[in-house]
Image 1 (cartoon, rainbow, N blue to C red):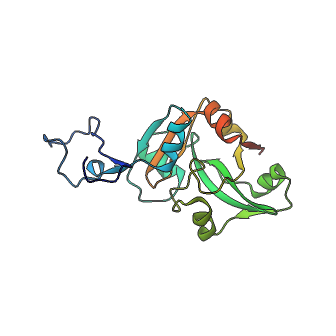
Image 2: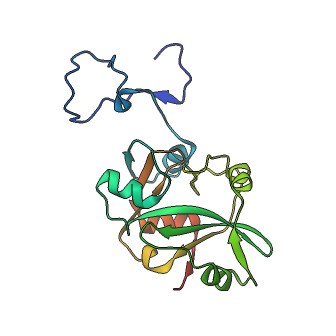
Length: 185
């Protein structure tokens, strides 16, 4: 891959069913484009965490859409939200089939109130675009809060640091890396 940035690599499509015989592919189909390794993936690899990478065409924001596009359970795929608390900002990980309880988040954080951070602040703090925010590889180390039921699953999935990138990993690894505080609902 001479002449390319070091963080870009080509992924051979896995049983995509296309009729392209040459490699590297010459099609402009979505799954044949150059695929960047995100900061979130790089972070997990540096920590020695095994994960499965799922990619989909990002058309709509939200974990529920991502889960449907990938054929995953919406309760497994979390949306990563940036919330504003009394004393700063935090990540909130919420299953795609649920809504964030701001009252529950405030209670878990020992804060009087909680609200969703403005999009501009979320992008500035994390270094990621809205629709691609991940707690892995974020520019700012923010505390992490997660819905208790979701943390109790054997495997969880969340954004990997880019639109259309979902990473699936063992919840024990997520707990070891991020030390999330449970949001009781």
